[in-house]
Image (tube, rainbow, N blue to C red; front, side, top):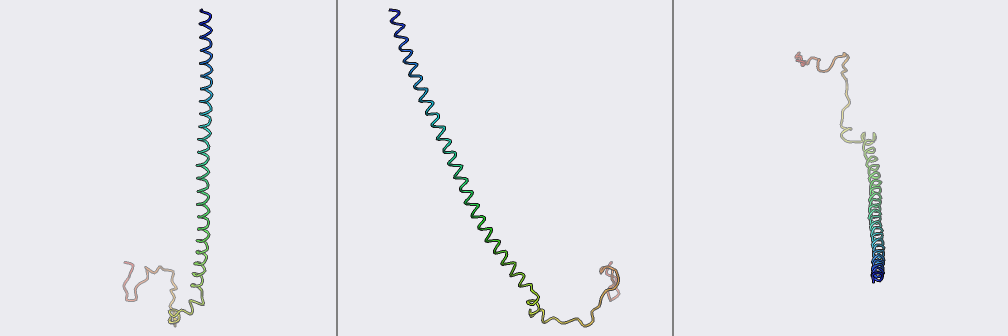
Length: 124
């Protein structure tokens, strides 16, 4: 009877051991599957962020090239406005009178130390 009892207990322990192995295998497969799914989602989010940054970079490069073109056009307009033939045909420049007898300062003094024509020293 004790042999039958030990044989029965050995069979039940083998069966429970087999169930534990099966449960451990299933748990391992579920864990590995979850990790694979998690890594796939992380890769998906990373690729999405990279694609979004590339799209934004392309838009910024396009905007930069348009702004450079506008700057070049504005520089050409400024150069044309400052051209000598345009300034010489300006009515304000044509209304200017030429100086008949210019008076040049010949001394090496500063303007602040020169006396006023009325005899007042303007440096004090």
